[in-house]
Length: 155
Image 1 (tube, one colour):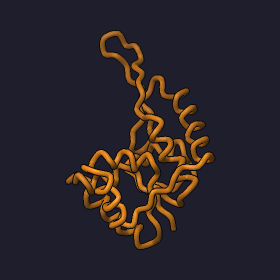
Image 2 (image 1 turned 45 degrees about the horizontal axis):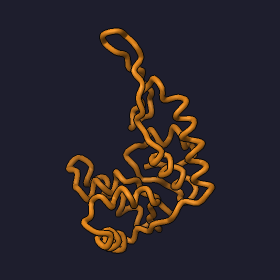
Image 3 (image 1 turned 90 degrees about the vertical axis):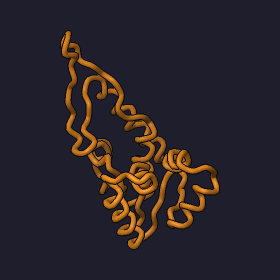
């Protein structure tokens, strides 16, 4: 089994986040015993901010048997397609990262709909990479990924 890992799961362990540390650590342990753990270059880049050097990051990934697998054209095109769909729909609603429910937000003063972006292209690259290269994605943003990658298994 190949399991992709989102940055938030790894940061829960590296920083560590007292709310999510144990859960994220258990997920990593569970799926490392079932097969390969992989990350895409976006996760690699985001993780690099937590290490004083590239060697530190490489050592951490080596010690945990997490492999960097580069995106291919198929996953990058898929990310672009999903980003386009998101961009069309994002204009006036927030999305819960846990369940995916979309919620409109209005100015309390004038009632105008407030629009802003919750996700950036890197989120879509991570999802598309997992969809193409893995059987499962470990992430705390399950609602988001299930909205745009319905056939992706997310835990």
